[in-house]
Image (cartoon, rainbow, N blue to C red; front, side):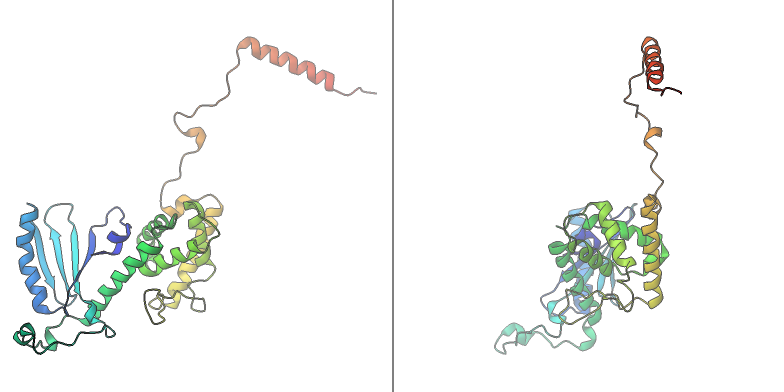
Length: 293
């Protein structure tokens, strides 16, 4: 299943890494990961003629598929299973089942890293939440793309987690009185951040995809929160003075008078009309002049 920026439609220019999740009916093991990595090149040859490099990463519980030609793309396939979660009910094996008797018991060292598998399950929940709540919200995807670009360009904003950024934009736009255009939406999001939403004594952001209360801003330091808040306040001042191009990192648009192909709608007067108009104006001016006493 697709997760991350690929599933959410948040790809920007220059993004070359995408993420996929492979669900297993049983708890994923190192043997299963290596078996998939060995068989995958043969299956890719049947689908495409392009050459791909397949490498298994045991520590990350994933398989990395990289293209050999430019532009080089990279696909990370993470292996996980719902059974990894502690609260997931596992079916008791039937002793009379011949498959269960034939299967040797697995050692704990053969299982993949549990934390990595849990992170993959969380990525699946985030993708489903995004499709249900954010995709249908007007200007939400556009503003998240703008903030992703801002996080890549400005080091101060790089401390904001991606999942926290998506939740922040959704909460800000869904709480508005009505649908907002891109300009009004970016202003509202910046106002929420500038008001102190990210600060340590602020309301915080609770993760809607977790059963227990979890703050998605927990990984941010106090200094990072204050820096992003101050940067949002500065961005609001730029918007107020019609300098949004500095926030977006682009050149200012030319004024309407300097744009090519834009002509004045006024018709030029002929010489006779111009002289007649001047005469009428002088006559009207004399008539309007007050009498001197």
